[in-house]
Length: 285
Ligand SMILES: [Zn+2]
Ligand SMILES: [Zn+2]
View 1 (cartoon, protein in one colour):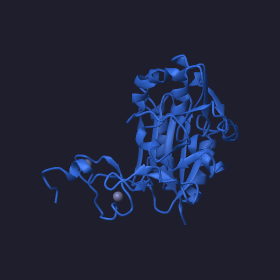
View 2: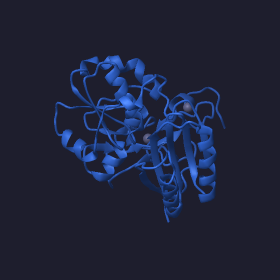
View 3: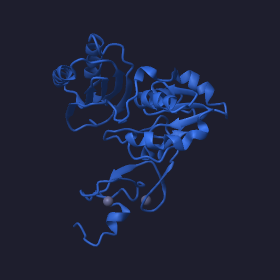
């Protein structure tokens, strides 16, 4: 039986995130769920995995909770548990932008169906609010894909896109959490006509597996990516031989640990070194 993976978030004012952390820990431990949960005064951001029954019980308990009710979950499957352990932390933000924006001032949300209609319009600009290594293996056809390594790098480069300020722009990310902040930030920066994709790539591509999303969706667990149809486009290029691929591995040099795109053939040895480490004068083994 495959494991169920739940991805979710909610912007909600939590007066005592540490109390919620204890509640989450007890619940997840009782249900045998593994994963990562971040709590802050602005809300919750989580991805947990376990049996289908445990996932259902988690959702039911959350829906009975005064702050965590009414969340729309993205569901996925994984043959093995994609998290080694359970980590629950309190942070200052549930996704780190580093700039003060009020998620209440966010842009209008488009449902997957509304988005699907809108992407037919060539005048509409799709703005990928994720990192470059994510858009490298999957993105909406024709999307703008900023060259950033971290979400908090986005505010500094946003004005590079000032030519889009009068256009109709739709921001998207994996599950929607980042766009709530990015679209608010875009409005602050004078973008006039901003929308966001509700539920992100995952909700859209699960509803339209052969729609406007190409490639695979990067995810932050051991699965590394999600495919939505049997033949996802291979948008990335192997760092070692340049063959098309969507497969990421971590460089086996512990000092490097960089994510590298590798094709099936190059990924065959159990440890893969990135080109920089391969050239390193000091062999590891
Ligand atoms: Zn290769
Ligand atoms: Zn390396």
